[in-house]
Image 1 (spheres, rainbow, N blue to C red):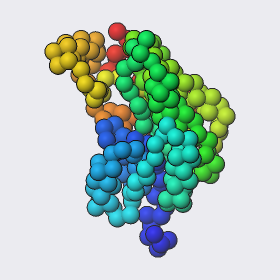
Image 2: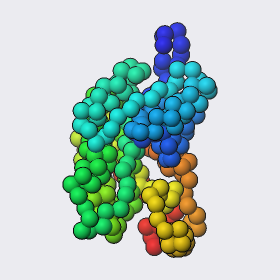
Image 3: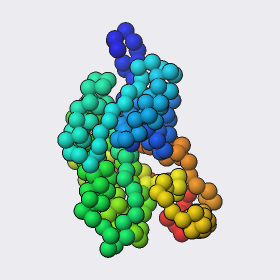
Image 4: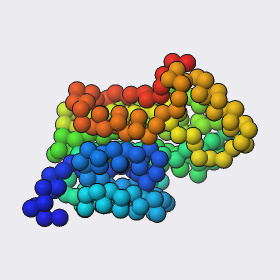
Length: 254
């Protein structure tokens, strides 16, 4: 990209786990607002390339993809290097990628621990560390996707909720350490999209009905509900740091 192209001034966001679901919705939202987007994916090559092509049709050379397994420290380091090299600047890091599956007590393995801590805690920390100098230069920000259950527990998902609790602690610690140049916040989605792991269909329908009954807003959230909050924190929340915003339709009140 040449400097005769005014797009070289456009801010840059890197979003982990951006090929599908909330990550893809967030990528589209930032892109619609003029950002250049780095789409990280692990296995979803086709979805990532399809999203990238979609964004580049709107504005050529405004999006690219980067592959990395966030459970692998070496690949996390490489992802940070590629993100910095992509457009020569970085304004926002969105730590969205998240492994999520049930691990009832008695079945938890060390592999489960590494998988759930990897994307939810290890990768956000080491990406933040590697990208902090570039974010300091642009007075940028870090936004972590947490989970409303990190603060209240979730039976059958102990390592996952532990990892998200670690992410909330990291948000507050880095908000202190990187101030005043870089703001660090988190967003805790409630029920936004039903999880992808398999479940008995009838039991699943009953659980979904129970969840909806416990949401004062009376509906599931949407990807845009999350993306709009992340974007607000990144671009308008200039006096907000170290904060966790629940986007849960009031479910935490129940």
